[in-house]
Image (tube, one colour):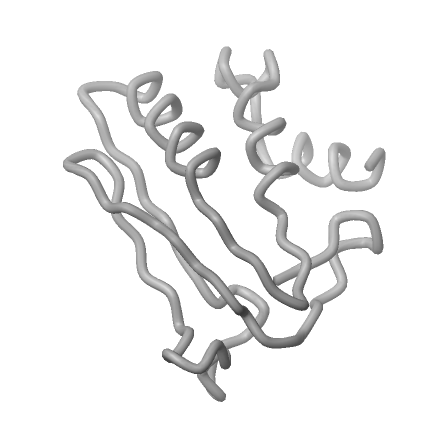
Length: 109
């Protein structure tokens, strides 16, 4: 629950709807109860999604599909669109990434 348009500052609020479907190559968990509240011990990363595949490219594609299908509606902002664009960037596809690359990408955003 971070706002990429505000320097990735954490956001807060209730979550009215969360739909995520695990698959053979994608799984995840979220710290949200049935009333839409984020667990009191969760930070702005209230959910985690993992992807695997026969190779990096298969895992990357699976993650993009999972993120595009993920639905979160509520008072919070998320980094979903930002991460999808990052995963689709040529540098990421070609595995020309490191922490300096990520820092520069965030600074340019």
